[in-house]
Length: 349
Image (cartoon, rainbow, N blue to C red; front, side):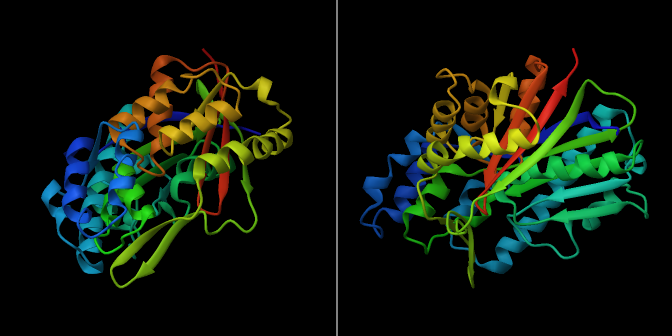
């Protein structure tokens, strides 16, 4: 059976850049006088490893409380613009026109759009009227890996067809002034906006191929990560210490996933991991028995962009490809569910 190959990969971020030191200063102004524990949590901002991030709105926009209508308007405007930009880059990199795309997989968990984003931008991009659309919601940070898995299977099912995956997230719009919780402060310290696009095709070769895919869902973990919903919008749920969960639970899950692929950890030449933050990166290196500093692309991406949820791991893949991939890589991401999603990549130099 033909396996799907990466034809092109592109990334984009919105125009507004926020330095972490400025975000911390603004957080003191917004939360400092109302949240007695804020001083204790303020160190989170310096421990994330983040230097700067990007947002779809100017910095000042986030300093005022916002409700559902304003957040949704900002989401539609910003997500559509990023979708068009990053898809255009991926098409240009592949030497394709929008009319060459047969299937579009759209991954997004940070806003609600019905009709979905792909339909909203179809005319601007130039998709055919018979393009197949697959919008995917709710995968959170695992969406980059799971979306790549979904897109690769769709490409494999129709050899020769072009499948476009777009992962776009506007995490900054979930900033809440009214939630005086550690989870909200962590979200403010960590998340940024961004998008990534991948074009896949099966049946005609390609240097980097999707070898196999797998997932692991831990039972009774729906409270680990996700959204709550109220009249103001989404509110972040982070009920457990994610780094500790990763350190204790990820390796056994990966061993099960790799076992189903008839692989072992020793078969993996490089790990490409979604970085939840600096402590998660450390936990990944520890549990996978990697030398400290091995996940350098992960640290660079988190420093430059923060945690963008689903696109983040594809930003890291972009850097890894530019540096040169080894024969086999394992792309991994963790997200709501609580879920681990993995994609093994085979690369021919």
